[in-house]
Amino acid sequence: MHSGEEGNQNYLHPEFLKPMVDYVHGTVVECNTAYAGARNVTPKHIELLKKHGWSRTFEVDLMDAQGPDVVWEIPGGKVIQKNYLGRNIENYDSMLVLSHFKGHPMGGYGGALKQLSIGCASSAGKAYIHSGGAVTDQELCWQHCAEQDRFLEAMADAAGSVVRHFAGRIAYVSMMCNLSVDCDCCAVAEDPCMRDIGILASLDPVALDRACMDLIEQSDDPGKAHFLERVQSRHGQHIMEAAAEQGCGTPEYVRMDVD
Image (cartoon, rainbow, N blue to C red; front, side, top):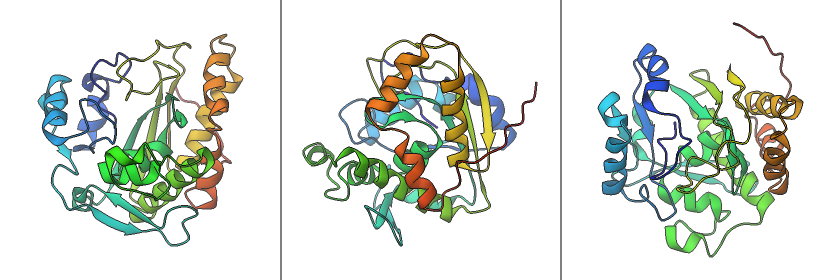
């Protein structure tokens, strides 16, 4: 899950997620970022996890706090053929992916597929994905940003490696609330532009992201135009196409509503 950047007002707080994490006796996991901020190096990130209440509420594992990273091969990767992840990911036999579904300034939107890719990647892995496999250095990656579709395809490649690693032992929950066009990684983020929609769950991350986007598109909320402009201007839905090609799941789904 996403612990929220320093200054962000939209991230989901520990008390909101506590019932789900407690129910599975889970450990909250995250990795360092590849951009300047309060989460790009371990000491600062640990302090922010405390400040935002995660470490006081749960057992928390910053998976790339200490190197070396683990490297998983991606056979048939369209853009990248390996994924750099925080080494502690191999300490776990299952994963519950808790996603705050919202917009994103680079990916267009952030959901389950982004959590699998950017979320699980180490700081070096995030740089590698953003640069389309060119570099693993935080500072250099922003000078080597991949063309947009290649970036989205690199995310899909990385997501596929995590899906395969935890095959049969992974589930996804996406929360459609605080629907800003900006991610929880933004220290200065726009306020939500749409009313809350609900919580969705699936065993298929592609179907889940597709269902969330469909609910946005079908909404009568006037704020959806702003949200969809963010997604479409970044060609954000391409990640679902690329992830389906990677075998992460299918965009076809049957929605079951429960009270």
